[in-house]
Image 1 (cartoon, rainbow, N blue to C red):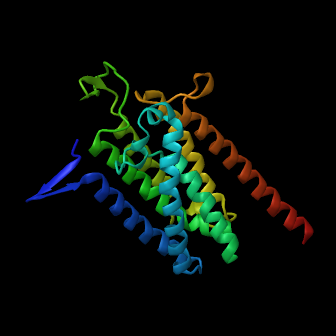
Image 2 (image 1 turned 90 degrees about the horizontal axis):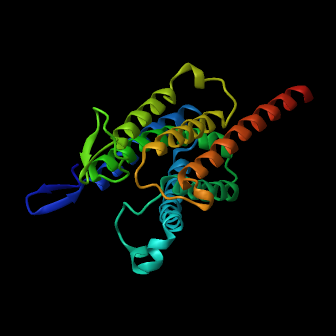
Image 3 (image 1 turned 45 degrees about the vertical axis):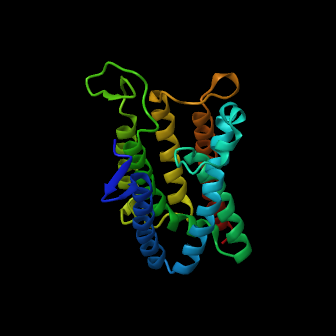
Length: 250
């Protein structure tokens, strides 16, 4: 774990550097993807900025909701600058809602712009996983497997490494230039990314040690992941039906 990089008298938080680097690289890929499809990069940048701001706020609010008992005991921690107090799925959901509202107000076609954002999200997913590794958060359950790592006084599943591998695989599958993503209906590329990410979360959560539970003892992250998975599958079905109907009308 490397939470801090010491450069002379300066202590730089590794998490922040990794996340900013992931955002920058992801934007480069997203801009290229958008330009190849005749979209305005400035619209993409504005959408990312708005979604990012609301996503950051939403990620903190969702995290507070998941760990409401802890924050109720110490309300001042709500305003902590600790980046670990953050829920990625909640941030993604709130950021998407904000982005949708922006697209509606600016009359931007939603599905093509979401497809253009997919490379950014895929790259940023790797950055999130690496930042978890450097900070030691999102740690795994205790295990006696030979590849366990020692963390917080016990041998644990290296869930951060699992997350990195999963995020890399998702990026490879969602690589923009792959033939599978050419000549597909708008929105399918983005929804495929959501399906892969939600499926990964459902699997990874089984090895987490610090997972919050919701009503009925279900893990909160898995509940949200199931919702995203079902909505994404429904969205793909609706897109397919819409294009079939359009062809029939012609």
